[in-house]
Length: 326
Image 1: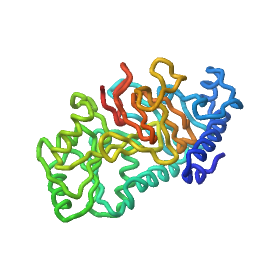
Image 2: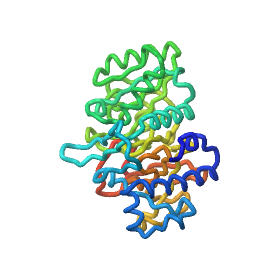
Image 3: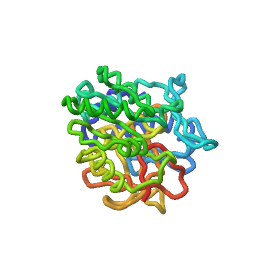
Image 4: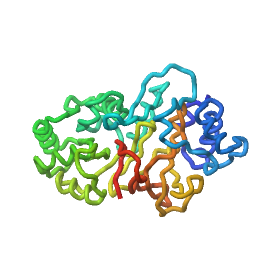
């Protein structure tokens, strides 16, 4: 077993690659679903010497298989959102403390001390179902903020509006984390001019509104909240880490997470920076499930390892992670 201290202490590309290859070998040996997939591709684990040689498990496997790398008891089952009758993904988590360490360290990396903020959450579609990994994370961040004003809002927009204005005018740093359609609903009822508030959208119209391109969406949100940039979180049920964008739709990963961009025509080939392709995620916090996931998202990578999400593959179902259609 690879200690999580090795994962969260990564500080260089060399270290990342070395740890990722260790995790690959561990998961090949201990995750029967992943092993079968690698064998199907005729991958010899002993010949895998670089990140580009590691097979990436298609994300759909989380809908049809139990993707786990040990035999420990399941502590949490995170499920994806979906319309009635749709098969949802299940991420079986045998050690929830790894998830907690990942999002706490990740948040701190991009935003500093959680106690400096009041955390407000406008996540109605997530709150109305069981098993959301986003709710699990935000609930913990609300507790950690240690601020009596932090909390969840469902449909009580008037109360949230009053609180946002009062906190902002008092000079309090606030993070409002919201599902996209609910943020749009809020600014339609009441436009703001916020000075001390970060607006973070988690993506997803959930079928409540038509999908919009990011530029148009962020322009509306900036105008409605009176802010200069919209922050975003890129996470999903099948990952235990998040990438964050502090504006302009450019995401950065914590040191234990990276993305590669695959060719849309040939899933085993990678394309150069700046070109659009399928997003493959390496999430080393997924040590107990699968750290190498081929998502259904389209994006491009920049030379400094930041990336942009540009849409989704055709005919893939709309999900709650940060998705914009082309």
